[in-house]
Image 1 (cartoon, rainbow, N blue to C red):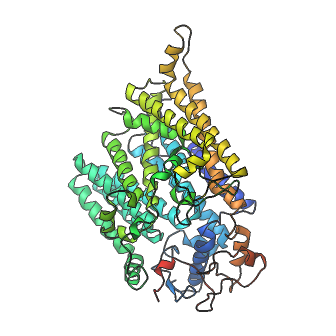
Image 2: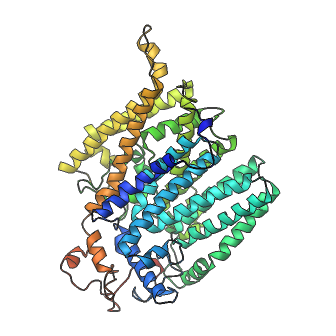
Image 3: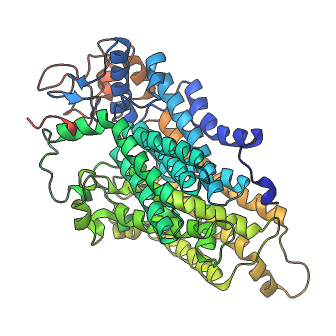
Length: 574
């Protein structure tokens, strides 16, 4: 593969076909079969809020207030509703379940493009950049957050904000600098309009780390600095209707007197580290075995995974000195972003938790585990750089001793953790303090899944180490693997793992929503009637039987009115 020949400013039609396949197969196709991605929080609160916002727009006035939740909740200033996000137009024009499907599909498609463009900007050739976009969207945190449309929309806007900042810093003309500053301002304003504070803060972290690294490399000119400051001011000005009224309302809500440990709720604990190697080892949707990790959260809140292929190539990039496939500052930026995001994701499990609580805005956010989106982004981009380096324009490049040792260590850890789950599952699950231990069919599924992942991971590592392993196996004969064979093996492993994640996170939940959540068909029926758009009662979490019985749902037990759920934490404290 000639890396230079694959560089360019535009995606080709083949590139577009590749990036379009993922949202079509995982979101649009199931929806056409009658199972739109109205699952999880999208079913219990997000689709109903967006439906209500759309009704307000259709009636010709701004969606400022939701009177159906407790004593009332703001829509324009609140979370989840996304009242000013550009894709809200789909909910105004289309049925809610159709709008939900198209919104998520567009977000996936555009996120793939954004990551691919970010990868090209930092020096990665086009085909590896496209692969980075597909892997980032199709695995890990971005895929897992399909149940939170506000997170997906916010993360998409954050990716474009990062892309525009990268281009702004390297702009060679004042015209290009102004254009990218405008793009940065609009993108970050959209990250705020999406209504997910976690996505907005993760965006701030990525932008801040990039800014500091470029200053450290003395590659940030005065013009770029001034343009960035102006873009930040414009972004805050554009998003004023949301953040200014939101902060004002917060003072009246039950967030006005947060406990000191609030910012530490929902961290990525050390007991979740095995999930980096085995994302579904603690449970998944396929067999109904879905243990609670913390509180009532599930894998969609904490997943971090770039597949075994991505993890191995990320190690290649991190441990290779003078990496030639990305710009020198880019590797520093990505590694630093991984470290900073990991500290934030661990939250109360690190000594810096108290410091974080005293940071403005950051102390208003819970679910620290959602910073893993930055870890995934950095990891995928590093993996793309490592993969391109390994191939070296069509040749398999032998890896240095440090990379070899780290890959061997990865294989050893995978074996130890995986075999522990296989041989002593009771010990393994109690060691990591899961709230429940699988048994019966659930345990059988976990064991089968873990053994497959062991074989895939060890196989990938063996392929990468083959140039060094082959001479020790035999001193005679041709023991080298051809580059085309290597590509096929690694692509097969990558496609297999991405397929598994898409099935577990997106397709299966659409067809088999866990008990206690509204199913997609029931949700679509609810939102079709003008008096039946309440989906959530603040005191009654299990309502699937009421949906099946076609009863009038979600009477607020305090105000005796229909209830549309937003963030209850932004409801009036009284």
